[in-house]
Image (cartoon, rainbow, N blue to C red; front, side, top):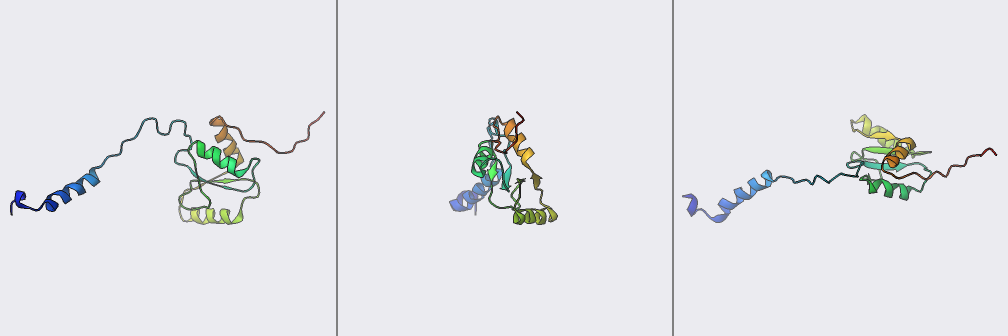
Length: 130
């Protein structure tokens, strides 16, 4: 059988398969600009000076992806005061298995927001000398 005598699906199917593997990804140079947390998936645990939903929204606005539980997809576990024991235990198990998850605290959170031009609300009580 000659190629021109072959049914169209015999010719087209391999061509379509080659297109799938040869497909290239076009990226925009502006992607990631102003997104210092691009590629960062985070979980917040514990108590913070600011409401957790507001912190999530701020981190999301600069490219972070909020997650509700610790998994192999998480890159940062952000720990506040009285961090959740179950999240810390899950973090330890995943790190032991070889997952790369950074455990960071309030200082990292404050510095990240500061770099992005956002502050962190400070509601801690302090005694002022008069």
